[in-house]
Image (cartoon, rainbow, N blue to C red; front, top):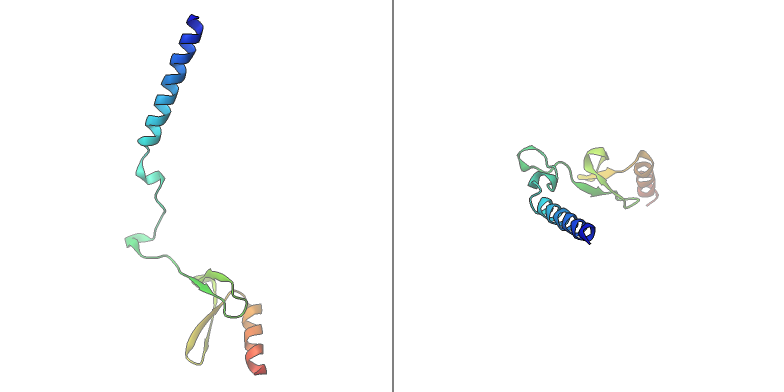
Length: 87
């Protein structure tokens, strides 16, 4: 009987400690890293040919009729240029 009471007390202490640790977790554990000074690090753009979203900084730039376009790969860029020449 004493053993069951001892196990119950240990279990209750364990649960109380666990819930206390969850409540008092530091806020830095849950924050998403951001660029310095709160600026956005990069934006997602859509490839006009294959319609895939990707980070703008990793895209291939092409200026068409005064419009800046970004492509996810040289293959998509070349297919876009080819489709425009067919028109």
